[in-house]
Image 1 (spheres, rainbow, N blue to C red):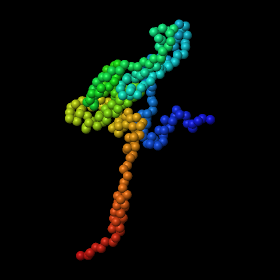
Image 2 (cartoon, rainbow, N blue to C red):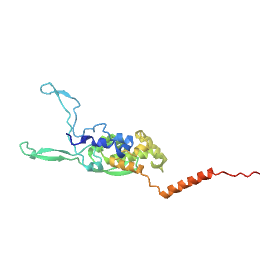
Image 3 (spheres, rainbow, N blue to C red):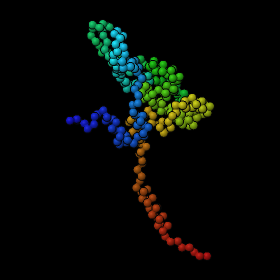
Image 4 (cartoon, helix red, strand yellow):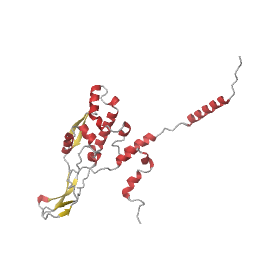
Length: 253
């Protein structure tokens, strides 16, 4: 007999169907669904199920087995470009007859100053060499943040920057270079193709589940109305009805 009514693997999915979680915006709930796998970084997929053996020439079945990657909490505060920690073993002194030693390979990080044209601000962010190459391939920091899928970005900081950029573009009249109209139109024309959602949806981009629940709670929160105000409004209505129901005397001239 199972210990739980539902398997623990689907607990998170069931939680989103009840309580305040079910009242979250539909577009935000859709964003929580995993639609694609992240782009392989530390391994190269074969992309086929069968291939010819180079020695015998016979057809043999192959599998794409990804390398387990651990993303530490500090990876969410930087832009690692999909890189993470890899655990494995190595031979002491590179001798295969010696003892295997446990080893963890970590990406090399650099603190680089990156400028956002939309936000008009410079950020000092820990990045990897691969991140710098991806930024160059995207033709700029803003394009990299806006175009990279969230599965490949894999950074809370990156999603927060994307939300700020989308809100700045959506509210361009008041927030995007308010003192320079020429610069505003130039920047907006350059990045407007990535503004595919209204400002109401952009406010939820990149929020964690805890942040989204708190935001929803604040939207639903109503200040308690004092009882004396309720009674005064009720009394005013009753007096108004009573006055309208009384007959009015009209003097003849």
